[in-house]
Length: 121
Image (cartoon, rainbow, N blue to C red; front, top):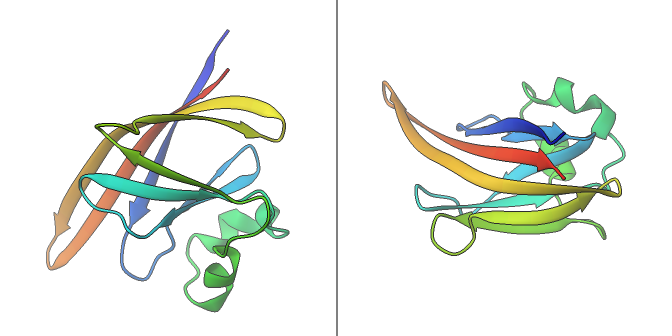
């Protein structure tokens, strides 16, 4: 049976855009737009177990965690040539597919959302 999950990363000023996949942090990385998005899968972060606490934290700790390490996997997604990538996370195969990019206006704020379908192969 194929397991799949929706991952929605939200890019809002002052908040880190991150999630966990199989205890591995996933970060949005610039550049990103309504046409493409770059992501870092970073399995080399020692604080990854505490990532749920980081969603509301601003500042240096999140910046430090988003830096590239030896095992970092940068991925670029767009709807033309790079819609999906196969990756190994904790020795398990996954398919990540860009599903939707939305630009939401919330008063004066612009919020970008990036939705992915993650399938455990």
